[in-house]
Length: 202
Ligand SMILES: CC(C)(COP(=O)(O)OP(=O)(O)OC[C@H]1O[C@@H](n2cnc3c(N)ncnc32)[C@H](O)[C@@H]1OP(=O)(O)O)[C@@H](O)C(=O)NCCC(=O)NCCS
Image (cartoon, rainbow, N blue to C red; front, side):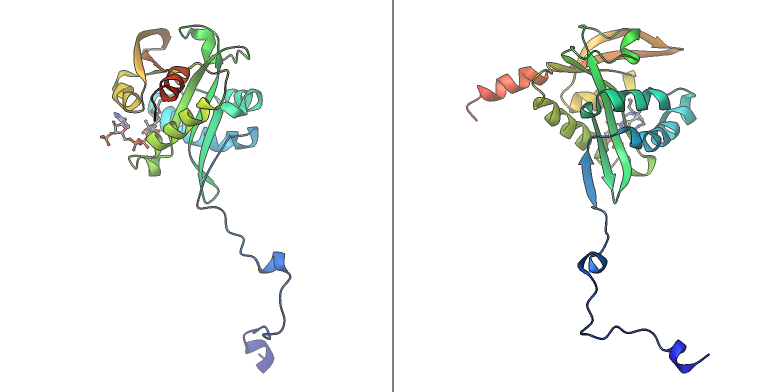
C-alpha cells in the first residue's frame, strides 16, 4: 500500500462543498401528515401485525387502503418518526346516522360523518401515548373541515374506554359484525364541540 493511499483524506479548509452536498440529509424526527396511496404498503404492514396475525382479519385490506387514500387522503393522518410510519388513522365520509356493512367499503363524498375505519400504532411504539395523541390531532384536524359534523367508529368492547378518553361517546351495539366479532359504535361530536368552544367565552 502506498503512503498516499494509507493517509485518510482530509479536505483542505479552503475547499467548500456545494451547499446541497454539505447539508446533512436527515429526516424529521417526528412528522404528522396525510397519507397518500404510496404509503399503503407501510400502512398494511402495521395492519398485518396488529390484526391479521391476531385474528386473521383486518379493517382494511391493501386494495381498500389504496382506495381510501386515493379518494379521501385528507381524512387520513400518519405519524412518521425519521421517515418511518409508526401510527396512522384512515377515515372516509359516510352519510347515515349509523354505520352499516356498506360503510366498511364506501366513501360517500356528500356525507357529513367521518367513518374512522382504523387507528393502529406499530407494535414497538404502543403504550407510549401515541394512539391517544394521534387521535387527538386527527380530531383537531376534522374541526377544520367545515363539512364534517361528527366522527364515528366501531370497536370491540375492550377498546371502549380508550376511545372514551379521547372524547367519544357510546351509540350502542353496531349492526355490523365481522365473523364472530361484534362491535360497539361510538361517535365524537366535531361540530358540537366547535359550537361549545365558540360560546364558552374562552
Ligand atoms: C389500540 C391502540 C391504537 C392504542 O394505541 P397506544 O398508542 O398503544 O395507546 P396509548 O398509549 O395512547 O393509550 C394506552 C391506553 O390504551 C388502552 N389500550 C390500548 N390497547 C389496549 C388493549 N389491547 N386493550 C385494552 N385497552 C387498551 C388502555 O386504556 C391504555 O391505557 P392504560 O395505559 O391506562 O392501560 C394500539 O394498541 C393498537 O394499534 N392496537 C392494535 C390495533 C387496534 O386494535 N386498533 C384499534 C381498532 S381499529
